[in-house]
Length: 385
Image 1 (cartoon, one colour):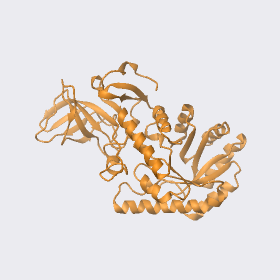
Image 2 (cartoon, rainbow, N blue to C red):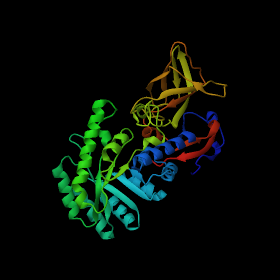
Image 3 (cartoon, rainbow, N blue to C red):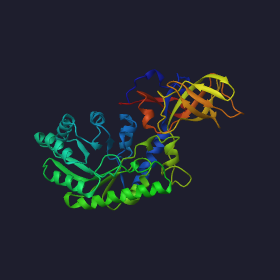
Image 4 (cartoon, rainbow, N blue to C red):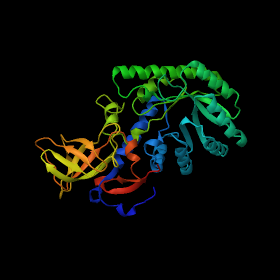
């Protein structure tokens, strides 16, 4: 890891200015090990979505734990991963910018492991035009979508048109199908689970349709961070299953705490929230209300507000649980804290906040403190957004 702020190494996170984002190293390692074990047990590969963290140091740890590659969402992310030496990247998106497609083709010709998604004959033609001058053959996955959903082919006729276009493109190679079941639902209620399962069954059927066009085992790529258990259940046996779950690496205290297959009382093993944000009470102007120096610029809020976890009272050395407190609103640099009648926060107290949806907390920080035992900063994790 590059130490952009080496002066904080060896210091307690409780000595550092707030707001500050902190990664718990032991929780990270637990999550890496837990997810790797789950994937081995279920016979699936993991190419975690790098957009969650965009932290090359964490890519290294994910690969070391058994991930077979890293997933990207944009060509710019692919460039960061290639620059860092990630050996195999899946672009979970269509690659239709001619300049970026030409750069990718040149890297593939030089030995870069890469595949992207296609959902139109136009997309295939753009890839063919970019790859032909290099002699590279670019691997693609045919994306399966749903009516009214996100990207992806809507029906068998559209898939046939894409397959025909690939058949006319000697520098584009069909390797399987891909899709995102998270577009179907945002929770694990029975209707949501039924919708996710139905979509994944369509994805598997599409893989069976195009199997005659694929040289070797069909790739089936799916799996966000909420339904990867259903992905494994439906797709295993239909080909080479590659999950793209990314948020497991830090987990959270909100949407994935409520909806991850690896959390809750019935989970075979539980992930731990590894990413938190610390703030300081800057004002306590009336009973039942306090304000922190943490806001929208510091913590995610798109999938739920931060969750108060612990307080370190001013002058004390050990945090203690902060029960009953709630963040009710965020400004750019303030968090509104509502407190139960029997609780209070004093000016100068430090408060630890759990977050919901790690992707949109990581992108707010150029570096994040990596805390070891006792909250001592062991290293710094840089992000590359």
